[in-house]
Amino acid sequence: MGWFMNYQAKWMVFTFVLMTACSGRATGDPGYNVALNLIPPDDPLYDAVDSASLSIRAADMQSPFIAVYAIDPAGRDAQIIGLDLESGVARIFRMQLKNDDGRVLFSSSASGDISEDRLLSLDFVFKQSGFGTASSVKVFRDQLPWDGRALDSTLYEQGLTLGHDGNQFYIYYSDVMADVELRPGIDLVIISNDQPQAFYDSYAVKQDRFENFVREGGVLLWCACDLGWNYGSITEAGLTLPGSVMVNYSLDQINVVTNSGYQLLSGLDDTLHGNYASQEHFDNIPYGAMAYLTDTDGRPTLIGYGLGDGWVIVSGQPLEYNYDRRDQYNIGDLLPRIVRFLSGITAGGTFSFIPGSGAFERESRGLASRPAFALEGTPRQ
Image 1 (cartoon, one colour):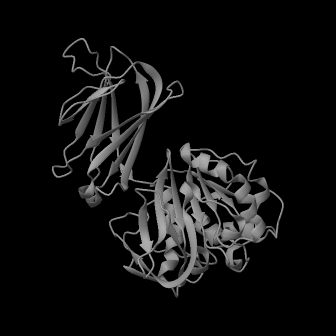
Image 2: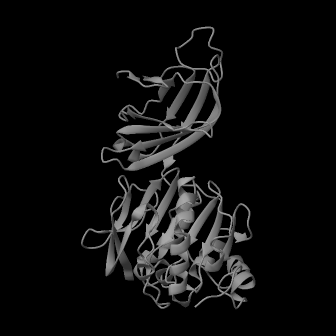
Image 3: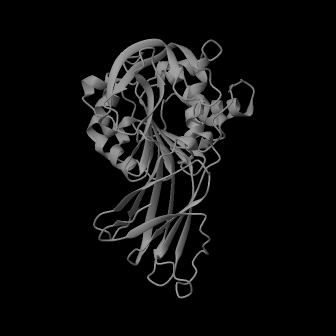
């Protein structure tokens, strides 16, 4: 592998090079002061990895350091990238493993201070992109999607409680979109399906705030089924989804799993049925995006993609409607799978929400007894 030079760094990839974390450079100086240890994931999807993309950012850097490295996954050997970098504190290193189509299959991040005379050694333990990136959930909605509390039930089922801290969730009306603190690296923000027009109009005004949240490291689940029982239209609002993804209203009772190797989809049937399985398909999708599901014409209906330092999943499925009818439709398990995936809980399995269970009792006390559809803000039609 050849050398790459720029104004900031020179690098080389080594295989199974033994290094000691934070060891001094005086003895056996390797010629670099940063060692990035790429630890291959125990995941069959790793076989498709073709390259590693590195970005290094810091508050005092005028522009990020960007580099791309070739990866050979065949041997499953650890790989080490040696970098000779200028000194600096609070450097944030983000590594993405991509296939030959540019899809970001795995990601990892680390941080540290760089010194001229000591070796900084960082381990990168990779997970499938989007997995386990949030610990707190913030839901925005003005009305219940299809008159159901499926999302509330799902969140309680996963062990979340009402609140603003880790392993908790809270629900907001759209009139406080400008005021609610959005915490990159902590919050999963969910934009609910099937909302009234005022909700989508409010989002259109504040859409840059949500996109910036993602670019700074936030996680966003955008449930893009409109024109439902609450009659709101994304198109009429003129809003833009993060990354300029375009929404197209199109009904299909069948969706197709594109790759069962994606952790989000592992264990699902290859063909998913619902009423409808999807109501939207998407185009103008960012380069490198994952198409998890497609409709019967092969058009993406569930996508995931990186944007800046964050991750977005956009869903064209009426997730809540089918969850409430999962005894009829096998796509009904998709809602809890997405929540579990983004929260770092194993995505597989089937789910039930049974009256009389502890989860149901907490849900009844916490939300179902309230006349409001959210807990903060002003109801809007």
